[in-house]
Amino acid sequence: MVPIYTVTKEGFKKMIRSLDKRYVIPSRTYFSQVAIPDLYEKCRAKVETELSKVEYYAVTTDLWSSRTTEPYISLTVHFIDEDFTLKSRCLQTAFFPENHTSENIAAGLREAVAAWGLDETRQVCITTDNAANMVKAASLNEWTRLQCFGHRLHLAVENAVKKDRRINRTAGVCKKLVGHFSHSWKARSALEKAQKELNLPSHSLITECQTRWGSRQMMISRILEQQKALSQVLSVDKKLRHLIPNWQDIDVLESVSKSLGPLLEFTDALSGEDYVKAARYGILFGPPVQDGLHHCGQQAPSQGQSDIGDDDDNHDMPGDCSCKLQH
Image (cartoon, rainbow, N blue to C red; front, side, top):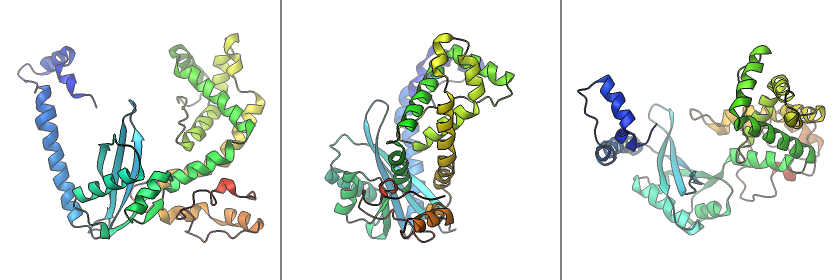
């Protein structure tokens, strides 16, 4: 996708003329004031028709910032249509310059739901993260709230590893390693050459995203996969040899990957949009975890259930458990 002003660039105009000299490129104003608004109205009418037939629905929302730090609030509706097919529609991603107080959020969400003609009495629940303003906003609107399981899983993993110095140190080594290849075309080119020589997959390194725990696991897995190629490239320059993970780092990375790998697969299962995720919670609380909880003298959640519905964001976090799971 390219910005609208692309149609005003001389290079783009030249390309179009070479394709068809008879074609007249619509103006930037036409796209911004006619074409795109027309597409929006058609899309909105289609979604409104779908929603008019919905008996019950659920919504999800989140606050986030753009790359230019502009605040936005999004609202997505989820429902089952007449053919019993689960569907999701993003109703809005609106600029939200007001203070992010629970009162403002509650009012904004209520206005958005009303703007699409949705009856609040037919809303099953709203899913949010654990931010205090989001929790209170749902309470102010008297909406049933369901905690985001993916967000809680992220907090649980972060809480479990943040106190381990070995993991933190090794993660720092990985970030520096990835950073070097991200900012050096020469290094990436050398890595591609080493991958071919060693018959390794031609994969790029992955950068960790602080708000997505899975990105750390993917970063670690990729470094383990490309370990030989990375060592071959970095060992050539004495100034870069300190970036090569030592045997202790590799040992930690392998342990972390072995422990968190299954959780990453579980996260992927929760990311689908064509099925109900709650039905898959039982995977996490299968026999191994239940046996571990039983060994600790605690009651394990029943199959298909979890504690994500609690409003207390502190006492039921896995990282706060006073025992360790036995595998």
